[in-house]
Length: 134
Image 1 (tube, rainbow, N blue to C red):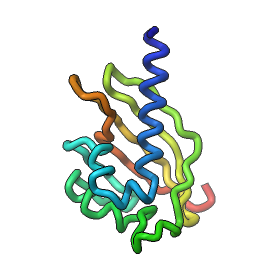
Image 2: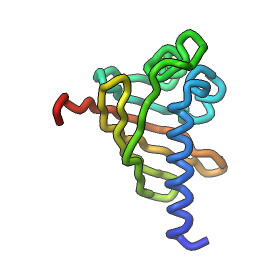
Image 3: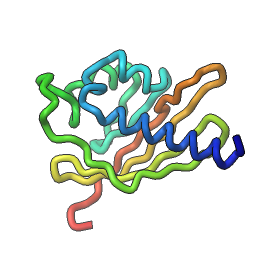
Image 4: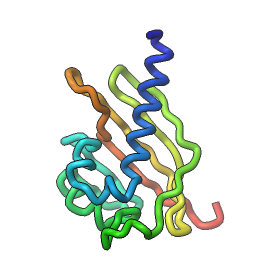
C-alpha cells in the first residue's frame, strides 16, 4: 500500500471510530467505549472541564448524546466538515463541528494506534463552543 493510501485509510478509520463514539449505544456501553478510548485519554470539554479516561467512561452514558434513560431517542450530535490528517505514523488529528440541541462546537481529536495494537483509540479530545451568531 502506498504511503498516501495508508494515510487515507488511517484517517478514514479514525473518522469511523469518532462516529462510533457519537452513537448512543456505544456511549451507553462501558466495554464498547473503552475499546475506543486510549487508557491515557484526556478531554477538555466545551464546559472547560477536564476529563480522564475513568471519569469519561463512568459519565459517558449520561452525558449529551448518551442514552440516559436507555432509550437512545434523545438529541444526537450532528457532525459536519469532518476531516483529518496523519501527524506521524500512528497519530491522526481530526477536526469538525457539531450541533447538539441547537448548540455548536468546534471539535478536535487525536487518535493513536500503538505498536502491536490493531485498533485506533482516542487519545485527546477538545470541544470549543461556537458563540451564537458566529
